[in-house]
Length: 485
Figure 1 (cartoon, rainbow, N blue to C red):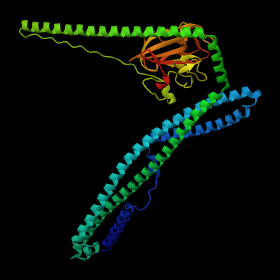
Figure 2 (tube, rainbow, N blue to C red):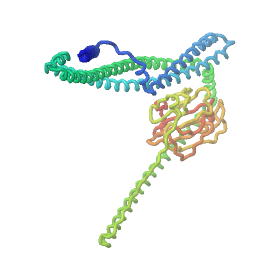
Figure 3 (cartoon, rainbow, N blue to C red):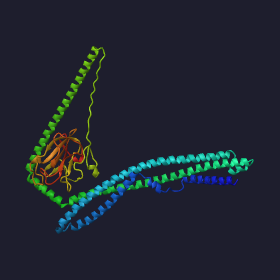
Figure 4 (cartoon, rainbow, N blue to C red):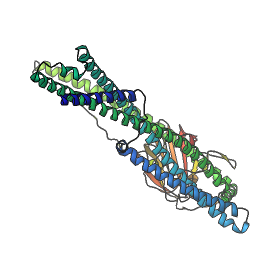
């Protein structure tokens, strides 16, 4: 009898636990993030967090370096005797701001990746939590139904069952029955408690991910705003650089001194390009005609072959047959470009032609009475940098004859002022031009993929210093490359 009473107490205790668990599920305690849940985070998110933390530390160091250089620039800007020191500090600050911008772009990319991962994890967690709650609710309903069945059967408690025994053998049988029912109840309750623990853990992980997601979104917006500020600061530093100002003045004076010769070279070069454009159009037209002619000849050949086969079948009373099949295969080369290493995002079919160097020293427009048809790309240390194809295409013109690879105040007359250059036909009327190279490593007629190396940056032709002159043309008319790259 004591055994039955003890079992009954265990069942009553677990019943109280079920009621307590139902109360908590109805909205009681707040879930707590456990070490087990934390360790369940994906390795990808953990690695991303490390990269974001590392970038944050690096940005902090660069900000401190910028602050120190700002003080140095301000303390020397009005002192003529310290002009050289001032310009050196400005140049160092330019490089520091560029590094900050690249670090910010890395961090922004990592944050965007982590936000996407968290959003995916949150969506999955919400589904898991919903399923777990349904499982718990179904378990509680099943348990309540069993208790109700006992009550309807007239067994309101295990004590009543035992007291109602007719003899000692009947009591033993009922004690065994009570024991087995209690064990079943214990297992059911333990399962519900375990489900409840899993539910709370998953809910805690969900809330933690949601909190982190909102924090990351706020950080992302802050970094984007700071990225914009840094770009503006970089432009201001370039504007303040006396070396750039002096170079502008020298360029203007050199242009004025050689204006007649330069204009003549540009006119001749433009005429050459227009002639080349017409020639290319004629070549394409002829190729198209040849293609259609071959297709027509092939069609006629097949028709003749079919007619001949039919005649042969008739002659052989249908005892012989033949078949013919043709197939074409093509291989496409993989594009390659280093711009992805700098988090540069393409605007269009074209990519940036000098990966790692993104400052435009001259843009498209009128300059000193002449129209500049492209953009000049210059940054410190650009000499020798790789010039890459902005898109897939065919090299239709290459000039590699200029040996005057140095900054000069006048045109050497090579390449119509472009020095060593090449032009790529990308189809659909688009051309790109790459000028002032030390040398071009491609040949006329060569097929290139997006990002393939064409040559290296130099200062050939009419060039006052190392840079790449880059043009985009559509149907022979110069476009603004800034709209494409």
